[in-house]
Amino acid sequence: METQTAERVRVGKTAGPATAVAYTGAAAFVIAGIWFWLATRGVTVAAAPRAAADVTAQQAMRGYYRWLVTTLPQERYYTSIAIAGFLCLAASAFVVRDRLGSDRAPARIGAPLVAAGALLWIAGSVLALGGHRAVGLMATHANPIQTTNSIAFTVDTIAAAFALAAFALIGAGMLGLAAAAPRPARRAWARGTIVVALAVLVTAGSYAAGHDSFTDLMLLIGGAALLPLWLIWTGRAVTEA
Image (cartoon, rainbow, N blue to C red):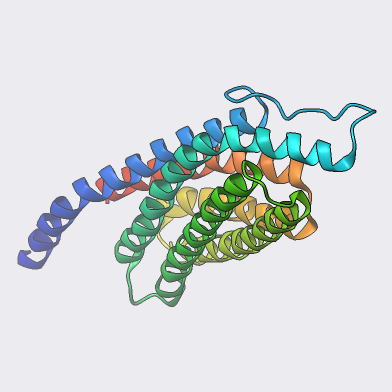
């Protein structure tokens, strides 16, 4: 009886902060996901310019990168918000591990994989922000546009590789967390976690395939819907545990 009472007290003390972190992460993902979609669709920023038929390739690239500079401030904002979301996701994964039982191998492995994926996404995004900042400075000064274009291509390719690995780790980690939920009351949560994990893995696959439009769509679905719902569900599950 004393052990059960101590367990209830411990859960009560940790559930509040854990739920707040989960809900904060959900809000961050919704804001960042929708903002990202609106920005890439030319709603919150001007649409990308279309080169006229009589414009040379170099002139077209200069026009494009001048436009790109105008999108960078918003990119910094929604990326920073998404970083907060991924930090909350990593923290929530460890909370789930503790609630499921850190002695269970799938939970013990799954939580660090989710955290590693989140940190990898953050590292790639910070790299992309720095690289885009450099590209913007080069585009607005007297630098060879071909060199600017090559640097931009390199930065985006490396950032995509980071994102691919990050989403693969997060998806694998969430599958591990789902496998560690043996109680009948948690079967629905486990099935929902599997659905989110598979969507995250599909996002990783879209990066590998190089389908940019499909990747953007999966980022919207995952960032504005699936991950927020999972975090909210997980936050409620912690409270009810």
